[in-house]
Amino acid sequence: MAGQVWATSSLGGYMYADNLSKDLRQAVQPLTRFRQFADIKDAAHQGLNKGDTFHWNVYGNVATQGTTLTEGTAIAETSFTITQGTLTVNEYGNSIPFTEKLDDLSEHSVKEVINKVLKNDAAKALDTAAAAQFDAALLRMVGTTTAAASLTVDGTATATNTSALNTWHVKNIVDTMKERNIPSYQSGDYFCIAWPSTLRSLKNSLETIHQYTSEGFGMIMNGEIGRYEGVRFIEQTNIAKGTGMGTDGSGTWSGALSDWAVFFGEDTVAEAIATPEEVRGKIPTDYGRSRGIAWYYLGGFGIVHSAAAESRILIWDSKT
Image: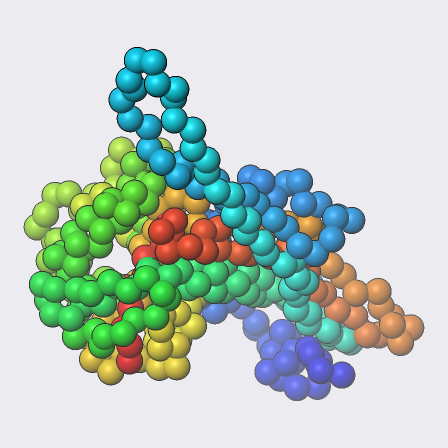
């Protein structure tokens, strides 16, 4: 069987050895970064026995803006459009089988170790699924110089990034988001998620600027490191550099001066949950000798606003 066995040291035998440390140690693990911003308030109505598709309505502005009235003339009539977003509910999960012999002979609790490992795996898997929907955003900003940038609105960057993310770019991105009427979060700020090295040049520039603080906020998000120009910055390592995000998802940007960063306001990605993530034990087989533990989740993620004019997300990007 594939999984944890006593006979192979790296797969189980090391769980009991002479003078084995009593401390339970694990490889370092990142926490969720993207998923914490997924909106699940409406998803409470999804539940079980309601199909695998979850919908939400997006109500547009009125077609004709109101204006002054003339006595004796009827008030103008107008309308607004309704669009509908959708996501598909899927199963997610992973499991680790193990043998009765390993469980009986190990000094460390096999079940405790596997529980922790699987919980970490679930967090990363679901964060990756949420991040994929953030990456469906249509607004892409490319730094063409240290003080210039270009914006595209079709989900694809058409220029090559030639500058590290700096204070000028952040100001320009914030101005762009405000002028597109992207609503801020509950604190009145936008958020940005990026790799620590992507934010390094920016952080170096801000070391002497007192605004780069996070005091005064009632809730600090996972990974939050500070605030500048109305943007609260969050470091993450779940989604790899140069891959899984941005126009070029196959490798590091050719300029090698930056990497993707995701800026956003409120109402970004929806999460529909039919069965919250949970750890499950396998029904033992082979007369109890074959055991296992799994994590399982039934739900899905979907970008809320699919039209560029309504987009809440802007990605710092590059063509190559």
